[in-house]
Length: 183
Ligand code: 5GP
Ligand code: MG
Ligand code: MG
Image (cartoon, rainbow, N blue to C red; front, side, top):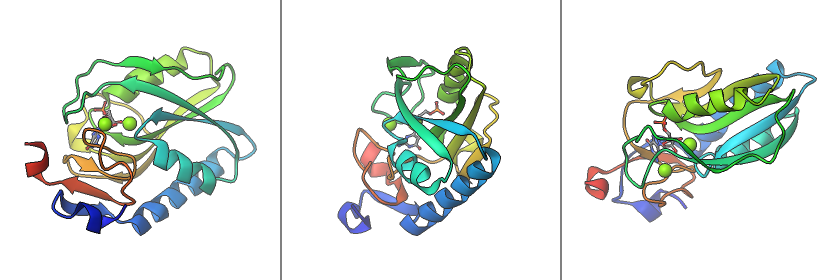
């Protein structure tokens, strides 16, 4: 789905398809260097991180395994509730594994901070985080995010996996939602 199809719902484009791909390639190269000779378990948080999981894992040369988790911290709105619940857990035993959490976006950081602690309690060799986007102004907790694609202003964005009420996930670019759509 491209910009033509959602004309009027979006305010402006934040990352084009090309910019996303370039950013993801850069992240993959960095990760490959850091994990040279190691097997990496990529853990994506559904559903938002599906697109970056697919592109990042294919851009990597390391041996990877993929697993998915679903947690809820948001309803259909645009505000973080701070409450995290596991809706679908991993199928992989994390004991001794190098885990890389792959996320679409870090907003308050509450979800990831909770998730990192949760995964660390399962005996992995390491747990790091890779996020395509981060909103530094919105962060409410300190978390060490080793790989960040791009820092963005504190605006609600959609596309490339990110939704508003389950819409816009299949845009191949990232844009900000026009206020009339959510107000
Ligand atoms: P956090 O716990 O860091 O506040 O955010 C958790 C999740 O909320 C993110 O992984 C993402 O799924 C969703 N989220 C946060 N900010 C945005 C945004 O700007 N747009 C969309 N579509 N989802 C967001
Ligand atoms: Mg997410
Ligand atoms: Mg959402």
